[in-house]
Image (cartoon, rainbow, N blue to C red):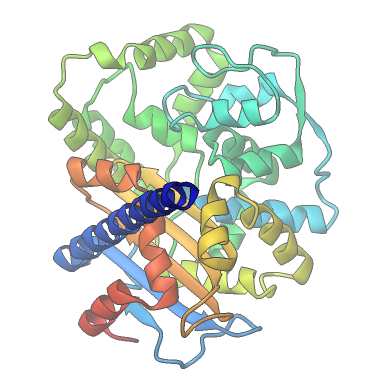
Length: 393
């Protein structure tokens, strides 16, 4: 009887694992199909790199639309981390410096980061209110904790506070040197306030002139909005009320999606080739300096939510992803546990813009922008399909 019960349990576990892998394959293929059907809105770069971060010629490379700037969403936070890490290593910034939570939260706009800010606070042991603000406004955290929240939780407010501290010039220096085809990186709060603004709700006519200025390098309107939100309590409260009541706005789901998908084009854009080169340099310890790479590796290789990937697929894994309306991105390096690339250092960058609402929701639900890179890093079926279509170059 015991053996019979044990056999049933094993069968059930096996069936469950089979269902999981079936779903993984389904999501991977759906993302692959989208890339094939929308070649100009997607990009992918993957290859094996050596101890110096240089690409190896091993027939396991894939380059598709590698030099087309596309919206990268939170993937750009890797550049902010780079500037922070360099300043810490150079002694220009103290990672243990205490930061008042109230100062950090002047950059926090509820609803703009998928709950990342509140999750970061809870990770630090701080309770949050219904909007995600810290209950204990007199609390302090370390500067380094904000860098961790930026990379582990993708907190926008933490990113903006760090961006203010390191300075836009330092981040621009990183992008100009290591991401030369990147558009300027600016405060995420500015983009959020331009897209969801109580002064002009869901108005592309209002947003387009701002986007034109941003494209030309003029961030004055974003500065105005940021200043109002951070320093004008009446304006700030009106904006918070607008965000809280978004669900009651008289706009359909399809109209809202169309608006958001168009509006996010105001955000920074970069190329898959540039991000792949940077990630290979970080993974090999050659980015800026060995100490800078080590600090970045520590932040990127310890993301708690990535543990299943490290357990099941990779001996080493680091990534920064990005998610916003119609946009899914990830830049990663990894060392596969098995297969013909076992023990090799691989870089994978995936950028998808213009995903329809239904497909975007499905891919976010099952983390498709992480599942497809599993295949690409190991050069499996989806990799073979895309390489046959787009080749190596």
